[in-house]
Amino acid sequence: MSMTEQQTLQRLAGIIESRKLANGGNPDSSYVARLFAKGDDAILKKIGEEATETVMAAKDARVSGDSTKLLYECADLWFHTLVMLAQYDLTPQQILDELARREGISGIEEKAARKDELRDRDETKKTD
Amino acid sequence: MSMTEQQTLQRLAGIIESRKLANGGNPDSSYVARLFAKGDDAILKKIGEEATETVMAAKDARVSGDSTKLLYECADLWFHTLVMLAQYDLTPQQILDELARREGISGIEEKAARKDELRDRDETKKTD
Amino acid sequence: MSMTEQQTLQRLAGIIESRKLANGGNPDSSYVARLFAKGDDAILKKIGEEATETVMAAKDARVSGDSTKLLYECADLWFHTLVMLAQYDLTPQQILDELARREGISGIEEKAARKDELRDRDETKKTD
Amino acid sequence: MSMTEQQTLQRLAGIIESRKLANGGNPDSSYVARLFAKGDDAILKKIGEEATETVMAAKDARVSGDSTKLLYECADLWFHTLVMLAQYDLTPQQILDELARREGISGIEEKAARKDELRDRDETKKTD
Image (cartoon, rainbow over all chains, first blue to last red):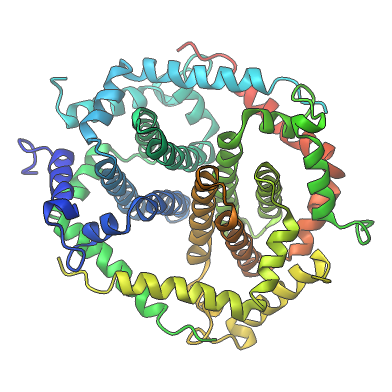
């Protein structure tokens, strides 16, 4: 992998950035420029689509024993989150920093746990 | 943040891996171990949930002008894709390699374009 | 089915309406009142969740040959769309009227076709 | 609209059924026949797509004060669940029966509550 020095996500983010119409991206020749031209909803719809395709590929992987398609669909999902981040002027580094900031999995689990506790507290009684 | 993206993702993947029941993960004390104990569907359901929350946070960001929640939700989405990758014995490096393999955005756009062309061909005539 | 006179969706919509806090719904005893108390995002998140569970149950149905779980998950999805409609002061009858207004499937297909055509036009050239 | 909800849904289901290839549906002229020709994944992907579009339209409705688009997107979501039901040889009447079988909202809330309780039990301790 020749990407060691120039990091993959950062590099992709740079190319995606260059596809913005303000940066000379051409919707006639670039899929990403076309997404930017269509705007927020077209990009967000892709998040829902690619998430669904990822879930379907994961179900298929258990039946076929082959996870190649799951890998592709997950790459598609990550790629379209990069387009979304660019659309909202965020960077993949900020996502990685947020993940690191939670001080490893313990911090993430604490956050997820707090979310669960709030939900649990909300949904304790349900006799109706 | 002095870590490279590979380091951050690999470190997270390593901690997630350690939460597998076979590696001593304890569902009583760890959110991730609990997801592993529940199995495929619980993990895949989170992909759908976090994608929906990401889309909602993006819509909110346009109204509030603040994309902090979008950043958090996108981090949650990526985090749960890492759990899914571990569940299917895949690594984030394989996703990065796949993204790099497409030789930058051009390759990705070609792939997305081929997908579109197939769909376009399928859906050309629709008079019924 | 004793529902022939009093129609199922209409009857469910009426009960859901009665769970609104303004109509005396009690979040301590009612799941639906609790959703209303939490607000838009909690309800919309359920749409994404139940859609994902429906997709997973459909994949499972092909493997097991049993579509019982798919039926349950689809009922859950419809039920939570009824809660959403109530939250936005819409009724299931308006959805049925919209479906009927499209004058049967031909009208619906025309609409879907127009959507496709717009997309096709947008995504014709993609050489980059 | 003088049709009952059962009549509207049954009529739609009947037209959709007639679009199956085995029933003479023509993918060249019918959007639904084209979905059937593509198979399970194309249909299930639409569930994920339309759910995402419904959620986005609901967010927009709060900003614009106009829920017309939400109504359309929810109709699209229901329509594609009807196509899915046909694909899996299920009928909308079975969904209505399942909703009625839960004996009104109390039964549904009990079911949702049981689901929550199971989840709560699973996710009680999360200190890591």
